[in-house]
Amino acid sequence: MGSGSMVEKGSLEEPNDAITKTVSSGVGEVDLDSSQQLERGLKSRHIQFLALGGAIGTGLFVGSGVILSTVGPAPLFMGYCTMMFVVWVVMNNLAEIVTYLPMRGISLPYFVGRFVDPSLAFADGWNYWYAYAILVAAEVTAGAIVLQYWTTAVPVAVWIAIILVVILLLNIIAVDIFGEAEFWFASIKLISITGLIILSIVLFFGGGPDQGRIGFRYWEPNNPGAFNPYLVDGSTGRFLAYWTAFVRAGFAFITSPELIALAAGETVAPRRNIPKAAKRYVWRLAIFYGLGSLSIGVIVPFNDSQLLSGESNASASPFVIGIQRAGIPVLNHIINAAILTSAWSAGNAFLYSGSRVLYSMALNKQAPKFFSSTSKKGVPWAAVMATWLFGCLGFLNVSNSGAQVFNWFSNISTISGYIAWIVVMITYLRFRKAMSFNGMMNVLPFRTPLQPYATQFTLFLITVLTLTNGFQVFFPDNWSVSDFLAAYITIPIFFGLYLGHKIWMSTYHVVKERSWDGQLQAGPMAKAWVGHFMKFGHKVQDIDCLTGKREMDELEAMDVPPVAKNWLEKFWFWLA
Image 1: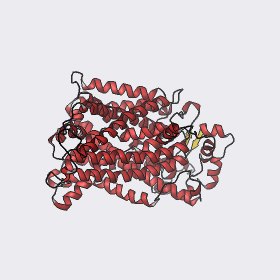
Image 2: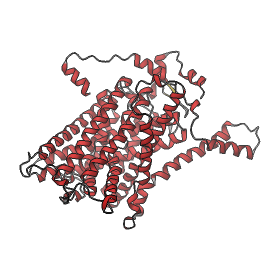
Image 3: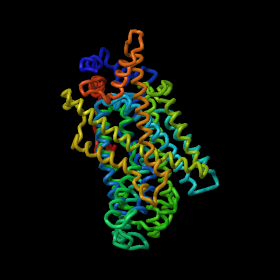
Image 4: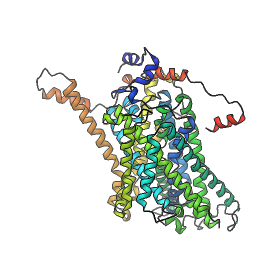
């Protein structure tokens, strides 16, 4: 698209109609008529807690214990801190783009197609959808296992079914009800983790009944120490311990920054609320994961045998183990309830996000049109049902052999998150370059610091992380075909989706869009096909920076920010 076509597409005859009816991209026309509309029913507190709910799942409460036992407390803390920098950069990238164009029915693959390449958008969309759908199943299964901590009389399949039905109902009724449920789910979880951090501080200074002052006693050499060298001894083993913690820490965060971006089209006053949510999301995450991971390393030694129990409920939570070591009763049940809430909340958030990705792809003609259907209340029910049905893979965990297959699926989905972040950063750099080319950087409603250098550095870092995430399988004693495939098979699958779409679109370009006077001209047709296939991305001068801008400017102009009437409202507006 040239600049002339951009102005034409961005023009409006009836602004209010345009806000609700038309959006276009380089990928294809997106039809948003009245039967295909999402409702703007999410408030600032809803999207903030939606993202936090997706980020703080069973990984912090239970999975962090596995990292601690593998590498020790110092790499655990450093790994989470490094990953939070990555999340900060990714969140900033997404926030700048979606604050500029918070259009209804649009998800991240739309922006990839608009600013980079339609084939990359196709691969990215299905990569996202798979990751979210399998994460629904993972969190549902985690919730079922947590419930078995209290009773084994009820089969795990029954618990899985109950949790699946509840999150389906929360997602299918109306977006404002979903947002409210997620807000309270996440609130319980955040209160729980805050209480655990405070309790850890009390134990640190000797407030526990049995142990006296803990301090950093478990970080002292041979007690057992701050590092548990990984695979080899010495400084190399300590570095590998840190890198392993960095890789595994990412599993807790993948696809979580995207939750705010995916909710932009259903957010009230998006240009006011998205930047607010993005900034608060990062520092809240830093508090919960930074202090949480440090607390875990303080109250539990990495060689505690309970960390290796293999359970996925409160008995394997490092918080519970630390509390039991301090001689405090009852709290294990409270923490198990918090873990259950975490699993339920994260599953709820992932079903929402997966359905919105599929809905947007259907609008963009990269998924069957059926998935663009919405209810009278603006819920994309067809996309919700499809994502939910895929989440039923959680029933594989009913049998041991099925559980192995499911764990393999889950491991693959985590690498999908790293690939998705790479695509996000590439998209942001192209978006920024196009805005700069058109002299429009000054019109961005939200800009973040250290750009584009922070993105360029993080893009390199995550690329290296993706390529080395399974480095341990290359050590002779650790070689495993299944582990190798789990670590790396997502990469060729992603490129297969990309190349498959590229081949299809190149063939379509030659057969449908070129005139050959009814004659088969093999040479020119082959040359045209190769030329289209070898083209990666839009030229910067052809990137559409205007479509949707005027509509969103008018939507912003209609926004009237709330004014606090007293100190209590001021505090609430600051908090939520």
